[in-house]
Image (cartoon, rainbow, N blue to C red; front, side):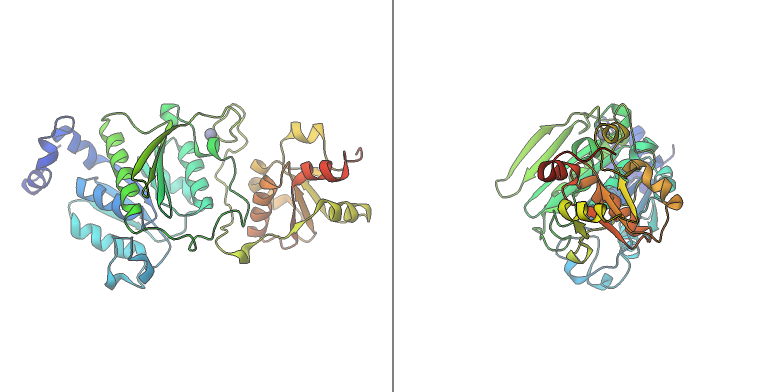
Length: 373
Ligand SMILES: [Zn+2]
């Protein structure tokens, strides 16, 4: 590949670096990276990838810049406030390197657009700040076979890892099979974060991305690097693939990306029903759908009478076949999968949907074994 005199000059510190050189620089120029989020993590990641000469850089973010973002999101400046983040990011990144292509995607990443989006890039950096996007990115990257450099920050701590199907790494669902139920984590904007922290983690994400594109060194697959800013200490945790993982395990139940509802505020709190109330409703001839979203073998072992089996992984594809104008009560083993199912149903327009708190485990503990169906 030919480089212009400008590029020769711009990348001279790469050209003279053993392990990179003009060959490595050509690889970077031919590469395409998608950055999810132009926020705290996406800012340093995108800046360093643009500076390093990654030829095509996509930025997906549906938000506008707010003044409170400037404390840590260094892609944006005072003039960006009120502007779409992708526009502000494109201006800054083009100003940094006009020899590369910046592709702004001012949309929300959803199950409907994520596979097409990822298909256009070689590698994905996840700089999102919420569980629904994290799960969506994990599932889509795995299904598309794209390496995913995942990072997360919380207050004074951060962590990152690389999920890569091509390297036999675990996936995010091996660590956390489903998003935590609503209310279990602080609201997205409530937790706070020390300004320079995303700079540390986002920069490490850019570093892992460059290494993967260059084929240099040992990638952070199967390991999680955890940074404790308070103690100024890095720790490394070994990650193992889970054979029972619903996405990458031996019997996967998730075969397409899943949209989960964002739970940023308490207004999103789910309606839940206690098992004693559920029992009363069922005894009074419930005229709705009692949905069991566990796996068929769990349903076969023990179930609530009159319940319909529909495993969580199959729910997105079956939404159209469900009656919309009846009440739904949804249960699983512990109330977690069913919370995800309730969120999915709500998102799809089902209005009368309630989660069975504690699932069938609570039923058995409080009421004894369910009556035979
Ligand atoms: Zn997995």
